[in-house]
Length: 309
Image (cartoon, rainbow, N blue to C red):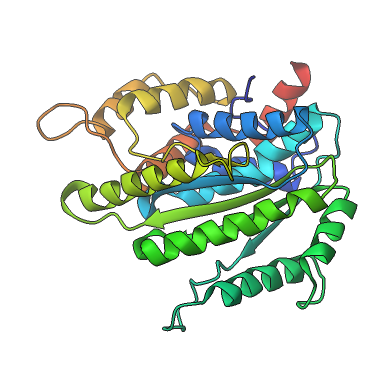
């Protein structure tokens, strides 16, 4: 299985996907493993004709820019998988509020109220009455001639035993749709967790992500959700070697290739002691954005190169 290297589509220099690729290019460093895992999950679902929703979990700290990864997955990777499978590449993506994350609510949700909230949110996103039953939602999903990507931004800071149970109930609700859905198109449910980078060197944030990853992997290994839940590797710091790999993938599209790029990378990732230091994606993306401008990466030039390949 191969995921395309950073490039631009051949559907015109002003297309929405073209503009999105240009904007996301600076966030494309050290994300191949997450992208490949996601693509493999969707491809396996299509090959085995799974009709149930595929739950894919992403996680990282705020400084890891998890939202940019999620955007790339639903807007670029998923349509590419559909196109290779001979399906329509149209994808509907919607961001829903995770039941229980209402910042104005102090009292915890009970089980039935949480599921009702989830069901209402999904129904509304499908332009159904908020009172639509699960069976009605399943019929609507089966009738859609396109992939659907449900996104949930979850505050990982608030993850505790109660929210763990809420998550399990929500996953069970999605899994319960499987017997009622019949569609050749994938239905992706992606909760993504983000936490603050706090503590010395961000250690507290990293430890929270490690605990979240362990919890999610345990859920994924349960019998009830096996083959239905995939946990993407957590996002992390960007290293000098990651940046070199990103540059190797990107520089072939550049109009200008000054000889000092390697030196600029070495200086940016050098600590005051002279050794290599990892940086956050927030910092790396600013640096990469500057390099992209200096390299004069033109969307029109890239379109021409891609057509000739």
